[in-house]
Length: 197
Image 1 (cartoon, rainbow, N blue to C red):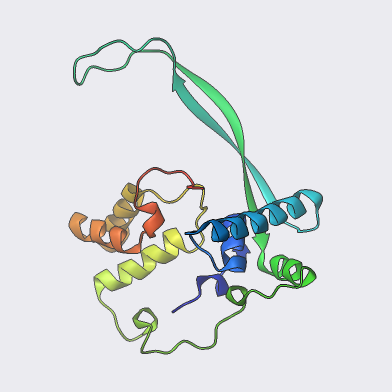
Image 2 (image 1 turned 30 degrees about the vertical axis):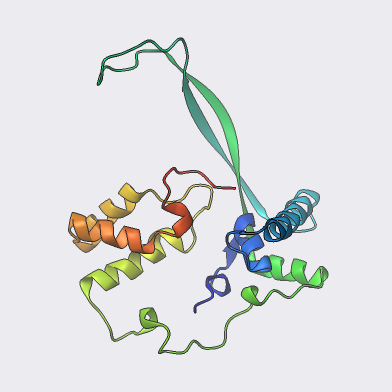
Protein backbone atom coordinates (compact mmCIF):
# COMPACT_ATOMS: atom_id res chain seq x y z
CA UNK A 1 0.00 0.00 0.00
CA UNK A 2 1.26 3.50 -0.82
CA UNK A 3 1.91 5.78 2.14
CA UNK A 4 0.51 9.18 1.02
CA UNK A 5 2.22 10.99 3.92
CA UNK A 6 5.67 10.09 2.60
CA UNK A 7 4.86 12.14 -0.53
CA UNK A 8 3.63 15.37 1.13
CA UNK A 9 5.97 18.32 1.58
CA UNK A 10 3.42 20.39 3.52
CA UNK A 11 0.83 19.22 6.01
CA UNK A 12 -2.38 20.69 7.33
CA UNK A 13 -2.65 20.04 11.10
CA UNK A 14 -5.23 17.28 10.49
CA UNK A 15 -2.86 15.52 8.07
CA UNK A 16 0.03 15.87 10.53
CA UNK A 17 -2.06 14.21 13.25
CA UNK A 18 -3.01 11.37 10.90
CA UNK A 19 0.62 10.85 9.85
CA UNK A 20 1.91 10.87 13.43
CA UNK A 21 -0.78 8.64 14.95
CA UNK A 22 -1.43 6.43 11.93
CA UNK A 23 -5.15 6.99 12.59
CA UNK A 24 -7.06 8.43 9.64
CA UNK A 25 -10.54 8.10 11.10
CA UNK A 26 -10.72 7.27 14.82
CA UNK A 27 -13.01 4.32 15.52
CA UNK A 28 -12.54 3.85 19.27
CA UNK A 29 -12.46 6.26 22.22
CA UNK A 30 -8.75 5.46 22.67
CA UNK A 31 -7.97 6.37 19.05
CA UNK A 32 -10.05 9.53 19.41
CA UNK A 33 -8.16 10.51 22.58
CA UNK A 34 -4.79 9.78 20.99
CA UNK A 35 -5.59 11.90 17.91
CA UNK A 36 -7.01 14.70 20.06
CA UNK A 37 -3.93 14.78 22.30
CA UNK A 38 -1.52 15.00 19.34
CA UNK A 39 -3.66 17.68 17.66
CA UNK A 40 -3.74 19.73 20.88
CA UNK A 41 0.07 19.49 21.18
CA UNK A 42 0.57 20.49 17.54
CA UNK A 43 -1.78 23.48 17.75
CA UNK A 44 -0.32 24.63 21.09
CA UNK A 45 3.23 24.44 19.72
CA UNK A 46 2.20 26.32 16.57
CA UNK A 47 0.64 29.05 18.73
CA UNK A 48 3.74 29.26 20.96
CA UNK A 49 6.17 29.22 18.01
CA UNK A 50 7.77 25.87 18.92
CA UNK A 51 6.47 24.37 15.67
CA UNK A 52 6.98 26.70 12.71
CA UNK A 53 3.98 26.92 10.41
CA UNK A 54 2.64 29.15 7.66
CA UNK A 55 -0.68 30.68 8.67
CA UNK A 56 -2.80 32.26 5.94
CA UNK A 57 -5.88 34.23 6.89
CA UNK A 58 -8.67 34.09 4.33
CA UNK A 59 -11.64 36.43 4.61
CA UNK A 60 -14.94 34.58 4.27
CA UNK A 61 -18.61 35.52 4.45
CA UNK A 62 -21.40 33.42 5.90
CA UNK A 63 -24.87 34.36 4.71
CA UNK A 64 -27.99 33.97 6.82
CA UNK A 65 -31.63 34.65 6.08
CA UNK A 66 -33.42 36.59 8.79
CA UNK A 67 -37.06 36.95 9.68
CA UNK A 68 -39.92 34.57 10.20
CA UNK A 69 -40.23 31.68 7.80
CA UNK A 70 -43.64 31.72 6.22
CA UNK A 71 -45.38 28.83 4.55
CA UNK A 72 -44.61 28.85 0.83
CA UNK A 73 -45.77 26.86 -2.13
CA UNK A 74 -43.36 24.38 -3.61
CA UNK A 75 -40.84 26.22 -5.79
CA UNK A 76 -41.70 29.67 -4.41
CA UNK A 77 -38.52 31.61 -3.53
CA UNK A 78 -37.58 32.55 0.01
CA UNK A 79 -37.74 36.37 -0.05
CA UNK A 80 -36.47 36.97 3.47
CA UNK A 81 -33.54 39.40 3.62
CA UNK A 82 -30.02 38.01 3.76
CA UNK A 83 -27.42 39.36 6.15
CA UNK A 84 -23.74 38.63 5.79
CA UNK A 85 -21.44 37.68 8.64
CA UNK A 86 -17.78 38.26 7.74
CA UNK A 87 -15.20 36.06 9.42
CA UNK A 88 -11.58 35.09 8.90
CA UNK A 89 -10.52 31.51 8.35
CA UNK A 90 -6.99 30.46 9.24
CA UNK A 91 -5.30 27.95 6.96
CA UNK A 92 -2.27 26.38 8.63
CA UNK A 93 0.45 24.54 6.73
CA UNK A 94 3.43 22.82 8.32
CA UNK A 95 6.56 22.09 6.27
CA UNK A 96 7.68 18.45 6.29
CA UNK A 97 11.15 19.33 7.66
CA UNK A 98 9.61 21.33 10.53
CA UNK A 99 7.20 18.51 11.38
CA UNK A 100 10.03 15.94 11.38
CA UNK A 101 12.16 18.20 13.61
CA UNK A 102 9.20 18.63 15.98
CA UNK A 103 8.70 14.85 16.15
CA UNK A 104 12.39 14.38 16.87
CA UNK A 105 12.22 16.86 19.77
CA UNK A 106 9.22 14.96 21.13
CA UNK A 107 11.17 11.69 20.64
CA UNK A 108 8.59 10.15 18.34
CA UNK A 109 9.40 8.58 15.01
CA UNK A 110 6.12 7.98 13.19
CA UNK A 111 6.63 5.47 10.38
CA UNK A 112 4.10 7.24 8.15
CA UNK A 113 6.29 10.36 7.98
CA UNK A 114 9.29 8.55 6.56
CA UNK A 115 9.53 7.36 2.96
CA UNK A 116 8.46 3.82 2.30
CA UNK A 117 10.74 1.22 0.91
CA UNK A 118 10.20 0.83 -2.85
CA UNK A 119 6.66 -0.47 -3.40
CA UNK A 120 6.04 -3.93 -4.79
CA UNK A 121 4.88 -3.51 -8.40
CA UNK A 122 2.39 -6.35 -8.04
CA UNK A 123 0.56 -4.32 -5.39
CA UNK A 124 0.44 -0.96 -7.18
CA UNK A 125 -1.17 -0.86 -10.58
CA UNK A 126 -1.36 2.95 -10.49
CA UNK A 127 2.44 3.24 -10.72
CA UNK A 128 2.79 1.15 -13.87
CA UNK A 129 4.07 3.71 -16.40
CA UNK A 130 3.28 1.58 -19.47
CA UNK A 131 -0.40 1.08 -18.69
CA UNK A 132 -2.62 3.82 -20.12
CA UNK A 133 -6.27 4.25 -20.97
CA UNK A 134 -8.01 7.63 -21.27
CA UNK A 135 -10.12 6.96 -18.16
CA UNK A 136 -7.19 5.65 -16.10
CA UNK A 137 -5.04 8.66 -17.05
CA UNK A 138 -7.93 11.01 -16.20
CA UNK A 139 -8.36 9.24 -12.84
CA UNK A 140 -4.66 9.69 -11.97
CA UNK A 141 -4.72 13.33 -13.10
CA UNK A 142 -7.85 14.07 -11.02
CA UNK A 143 -6.26 12.55 -7.90
CA UNK A 144 -3.19 14.75 -8.40
CA UNK A 145 -5.26 17.86 -9.17
CA UNK A 146 -7.85 17.62 -6.41
CA UNK A 147 -6.88 15.23 -3.61
CA UNK A 148 -3.13 14.95 -3.01
CA UNK A 149 -2.73 18.38 -1.41
CA UNK A 150 -6.29 19.48 -0.65
CA UNK A 151 -7.37 21.55 2.33
CA UNK A 152 -9.26 19.11 4.59
CA UNK A 153 -11.58 21.88 5.76
CA UNK A 154 -12.60 22.64 2.14
CA UNK A 155 -12.60 19.40 0.14
CA UNK A 156 -13.16 19.62 -3.60
CA UNK A 157 -16.78 19.61 -4.69
CA UNK A 158 -18.10 16.73 -6.76
CA UNK A 159 -19.39 19.04 -9.49
CA UNK A 160 -16.00 20.79 -9.82
CA UNK A 161 -14.22 17.46 -10.32
CA UNK A 162 -16.80 16.23 -12.83
CA UNK A 163 -16.64 19.46 -14.87
CA UNK A 164 -12.82 19.40 -14.80
CA UNK A 165 -12.74 15.78 -16.06
CA UNK A 166 -15.16 16.62 -18.88
CA UNK A 167 -13.29 19.78 -19.88
CA UNK A 168 -9.67 18.64 -19.54
CA UNK A 169 -9.92 14.92 -20.33
CA UNK A 170 -12.97 14.63 -22.58
CA UNK A 171 -14.79 12.24 -20.23
CA UNK A 172 -18.50 11.70 -20.59
CA UNK A 173 -20.66 12.88 -17.72
CA UNK A 174 -21.24 9.30 -16.59
CA UNK A 175 -17.54 8.40 -16.70
CA UNK A 176 -16.63 11.63 -14.86
CA UNK A 177 -19.17 10.82 -12.11
CA UNK A 178 -17.76 7.30 -11.81
CA UNK A 179 -14.18 8.57 -11.56
CA UNK A 180 -15.20 11.07 -8.88
CA UNK A 181 -16.88 8.29 -6.92
CA UNK A 182 -13.78 6.09 -7.13
CA UNK A 183 -11.26 8.76 -6.08
CA UNK A 184 -13.36 10.51 -3.39
CA UNK A 185 -12.29 9.45 0.14
CA UNK A 186 -14.98 7.55 2.03
CA UNK A 187 -15.34 10.28 4.66
CA UNK A 188 -16.13 12.83 1.91
CA UNK A 189 -18.92 10.80 0.29
CA UNK A 190 -21.53 11.87 2.84
CA UNK A 191 -22.01 15.31 1.33
CA UNK A 192 -21.37 18.79 2.59
CA UNK A 193 -18.22 20.83 2.10
CA UNK A 194 -17.10 21.07 5.69
CA UNK A 195 -14.54 19.31 7.81
CA UNK A 196 -15.97 16.44 9.83
CA UNK A 197 -14.46 16.48 13.32
